[in-house]
Image 1 (cartoon, rainbow over the protein chains, first blue to last red):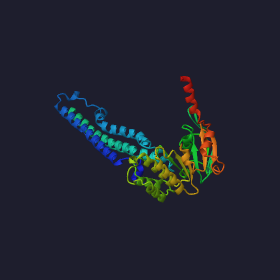
Image 2 (image 1 turned 90 degrees about the horizontal axis):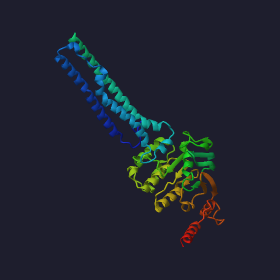
Image 3 (image 1 turned 135 degrees about the horizontal axis):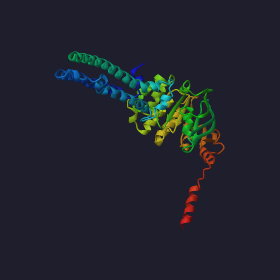
Image 4 (image 1 turned 30 degrees about the horizontal axis):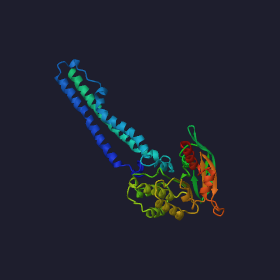
Length: 149
Length: 244
């Protein structure tokens, strides 16, 4: 199967791929702010007078604001699905041609492949980032425990 | 052969087709006539399986479905091409998806209509788009070619070209079901006229021998639709009486 069989005919897929790559890079860079917050927390901890009363926010609360980039890409990709189906009725009714093809899955493959791929790639990168950030968080928690200890 | 038995289709309370029975053999050019809303487009879309309907439609004895849909092509004034693809792109797409695609016919027709091959179809004029739609439907390699107002918006020269093409390229086993309002223009080359009125077939006329009987298709159609040409005159006269 060729790449051109995986999206609606005539769609400028290179541009969409470009937007996706830029969005993923932005989402990753934005999530890096979590590391900076961890550093801030560590600094604040070191400067704190009373370690015993220092409370580290739980991981979910701390990390969630920095994962928004990934969430937005997933939401955008979900919205791409009706858009891709609608593409076959925009400018002309090429949906009539799609309905006359032998393979009934042809239209679905072309409408779903890229959005689903974007969702999977984004989720995979997001989960990897979460895993990495969780390790950083655990290190931080351990350091704080030692300091308080 | 396309066989239609007791075909009914309704949109909510509106009955678009009412128990239509029809047989169309291979090798005919059939005109489908009727006023706006008579059910012409609905009939074609039911044949193609684009919409749900009551009744039975078979193609060579088999229900129309994915297995045999390739035998039917469709040219519509709504256009079924991909507007962002070029002519060459379409050729590739059709070659990939229709085993019976007639590449030579496609090339010949593109040349005949003088259509650019490497420009997006979206950039074509309305006439060019209609011509391209016809080129695709004739090149798909289908036996049954359904055409729904394929040259709506084309000038007389475009239409003349279209008629020449139809008569020039069709093979004996190819059938055309042509829906149009241009009855007089097509009456010279169609072999049969099916008349629809409010979702029902009110006439099925074979044109062979009509001339010898001194009849014209137009007269027959007017008769079937109970058309009264003097109606306008009567209304105008009535109005004059009221106002005088």
